[in-house]
Amino acid sequence: MTPTVLRSVAELRAHVADWKAAGATVGVVPTMGALHDGHLSLARRARAACERVIVTIFVNPRQFNNPADLEKYPRTEEQDAALLAQVGVDAIFAPPPEEVYPRGFATTVSVTGVSEPLEGAHRPGHFDGVATVVAKLFGMTRADRAFFGEKDWQQLMVVQRLVADLNIPIAIEGCPTVREPDGLAMSSRNIRLSAEGRARAPALCRAMQAAAAAMRGGLPVPEGLAQARSEVLAAGFDTVDYLELRTADLLLPMERLEGEGRLLAAATLDGVRLIDNIPV
Image (cartoon, rainbow, N blue to C red; front, side, top):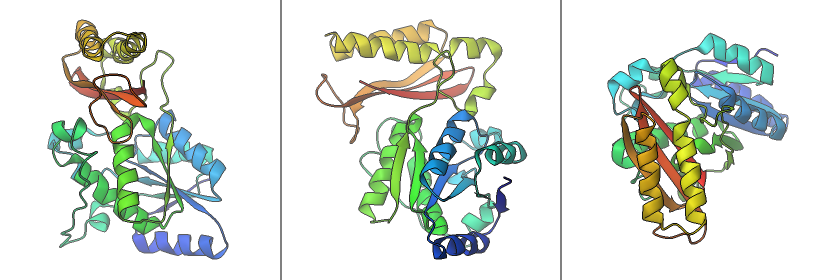
């Protein structure tokens, strides 16, 4: 089944209105394109849960604090559409920037608290861009359910907070991180790694898993985190922006293992910034 490609909000809303008039539930998978198996797993999850599925493809300029990173972000719409056809997606919403941010656009959605540490501290304005575009996509699609990957755990927490605080009538479903056979979390950025960098990249996940096991075994949290950082740098990573243990929901610092925690990390390799997280 070839998905219908929609470019305007008016086209999108006309399709959704027809589906809802027929009693269909509508699922949405927000993406920036350059799709991989992680994205496709979200689309499959949506396909299994909803009668109609929309995948959005929009490289959102407002969530990039580095213009060079925005410029380098891969854009592969034709390939993405072919992959989504195999999943059975009903529609692709791929608007131009001026459709999302028309002339005179002056509104920013800002979620405090969960957006502030980690990625928020290293990428100022990033989550304002995420929250703004996600709020718009929910309003544009009128979807009943939205599907996000747990790989971007902090983003998932921001979106859940946004929906709860603004009473947006949509259910948010987090879906497990999809990994390569060697453990590397799938990401559109991975294609920018050199062959040598790609071989080294799984060290991030390995170090995190080893630290989580050690801390569960009684190693003090600060020692476990320091050990993991050292292992990541020793594996050839250029920098470690953060590698921290936080509470899973509010992302508050955890000094000891009490309740549900999340180990989150961001590190740079080959000039490519990789992020990952695992439960502890």
